[in-house]
Amino acid sequence: MKFWGYRRSGGGIGVRNHVLVFPTVICASTVAQMISREVPGTVYVTHPHGCGHLGEEKEHMIRAMAGFCGNPNVAGVLLVGLGCELLTPDLIAEELHKTGQRFEIISIQAEGGTTNTIARGKELTQKLLKEVASAKGELVDLSELILGTHCGGSDTLSGLTANPAVGVACDLLVAEGGTAMFSETVEMLGAEHILARRAANDEVRKRIWEITAATEANMKSAGFYVLGVEPSPGNIEGGLTTLEEKSLGAIRKGGTSAIMQVVKYAEKPSQKGLVIMDGPAHDVASDTGMIAAGAQVIVFTTGRGTPLGSPVAPVIKVSSNSTIYHRMKENIDINAGVILDGGESIQSVGERIFKEIIDVASGKLTRAEILGHNEFAVHPIGPTV
Amino acid sequence: MPPSAIVVDRKDNVATALRQLEQGDSIRVELGANVIDVTLSQTIPFGHKFALKDIEPGEPIIKYGEVIGLATRKIMKGEHTHIHNVEGLKGRGDKQ
Image 1 (cartoon, chains in turn purple, orange):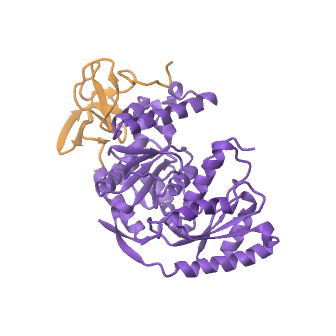
Image 2 (cartoon, helix red, strand yellow):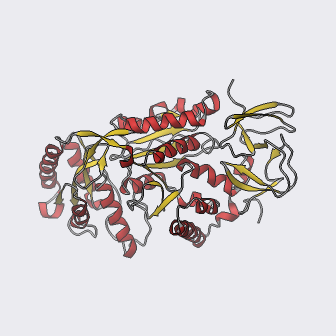
Image 3 (cartoon, chains in turn brown, red):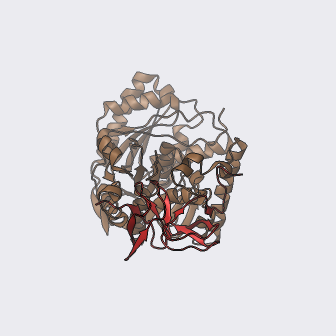
């Protein structure tokens, strides 16, 4: 099966043709936003990062920012810096250069302040827009697609309707040679042995044990012992019997394929098929990490109703129940609650989600895109000073 | 008529109630291509599980096609399947 995408010089396939105005440091966030607002047709993010990152977190931030700016949905990027920050536009540009991403650079101190930077930034952004305008879509194979999945604002039904249905869609994508990714390492605790059994090889199996053990140790050092508190009394009252059951409800959104690779946060997979990203449960930071890892489309399941979207990648929202679908219809693309009250099977809803993924990849706008949702956050690993 | 219960995977030996089900209710669930009729021996609250077949002590409880725990006693078809007759291989919140 195929979808319409934009072939990039670096090899990836974009499902959007965005020009992104990206601040490499918080101090440039307002200016980046002002530049983007001056140039219709561009997108931007703001964020609190870019300075004070020490050691491993510095590399982690560079990988996340460069990965996000280098996502194939971004046809060109204007990197906006201040001048004295740790993560200068040059550092990010160095990474983008390796992947062949089109970029321009501007710094507020060098330009002589806010007004001059906006004026010059506007020129550079318009130049980028002209350069990317001629990009032509072509029919490409589904094996070129990386899908990120996440569940947020979960409820009792998330693990019974929305997550299994998204899992069906992931299985269909993997069967077509594509890549599906899931993250939220903390939600894998209790089901490590099940995931490990599904590992494609010993290296993947080892990595699954490593990331889950590290997350458990990390939580323990913060005073939380997950195996002692989960499933919570509220979970048990709701019908969840064991931690395995709770975790399986979350990881089912990745489907049932063999796990081909475990990547770091914001690390691009080198394998196709089902891939785990070692990432947070934080909705926006998880999505940002998967987009930085190359996901062109995200599917997001929600029980309580979550509006988030990304300026760079379309986010397809799947509700687990019909009540929230009807209450927040403008935010939700597909209602998996019909498995409960509409007589539709998990398989059938999963097939509809799969078709929606192909349509959205081919240009159909998601609710989050129509509403202009623009969330962005990098998962901090510290230390930051 | 909306379904009363759901089976996520064809390998499962439990179903999850999609609304409160009463003792004596006869529930029909789809298990892959097969259809199974179960008469409930107890009230099953929304979100809780019941057995689709007789399960022996020590036998795995399967949901999502995976082992979510082991039966701690014999569980009869149609019986509430929860913390009183299932033990996870990992920890549990209300127990050290």
